[in-house]
Image 1: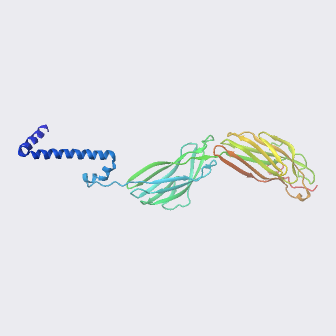
Image 2: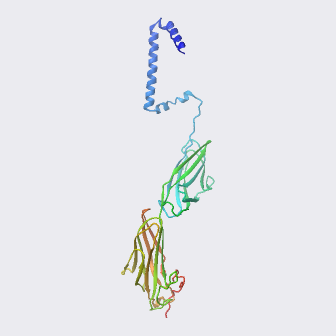
Length: 356
């Protein structure tokens, strides 16, 4: 190679440079110009790489090269509930658009939980058709043309497998789609959904306790003009999150008064005489539950207008409390309680008022 360069130099010198020095000057000028142009091109490329792409030099290098078409799918998912109860259905709003260069033959979408404490039970949607259906717990969408878009409201049915499950649903969408002999697999992280505490409140009237012990005093069935003492037992059960500011309240019906006997295993109570409203309050309930029970003696004296009927004992039973994990208030109501004693297994149905 070195000898070829020397030979070329000597040949050019004998043929051009010795006869006319301008040939040497011209060659040197051209070499300098080429070096300057290369330097300017490298400078531009380092300053803005898109300039080289804009030149599209590839078509000059290989004019027969085919342009690769892009397979692309844009998916957005919104969760309709920020808070759910345990095992409550969750609704997903899924929006999609084929923003690539080729038609998509099929899209497979499936929710996937990050924790093994949860299990996907089923998927449902209202607008099923030949191009959109559910199979083996997958949402399947078919034949999405370039630029086409759509929306699906997907109802997710799930369950918990462990009692000590996390107090939020952390999950994602597992997706795959194919077209033009290409396939893409990717995940989309979904917003977390907090799980509210499992709260159960029971309020019942007894003459005999569930264990068979006599609590009440007086005639049963009740008799006009003669007091019968019942016991109201209220139980609050909690499992899941820390709760606070629990309040239970109920109105005493006409002819019903507090006997003055009560037993509270938690909290405190008060009575509004003007409104005839009994109120039981607890500052906080542990996430693991506890003995949250209140017992109240109630004296009921029937009147003649109630003969032949079960008499109302308590009405407008309401409760409320605050879930500190989900930052939500839980509200609820219970059925009115009468003298029929539905929860008293020994005296159920013995509440019809008699004249004598």
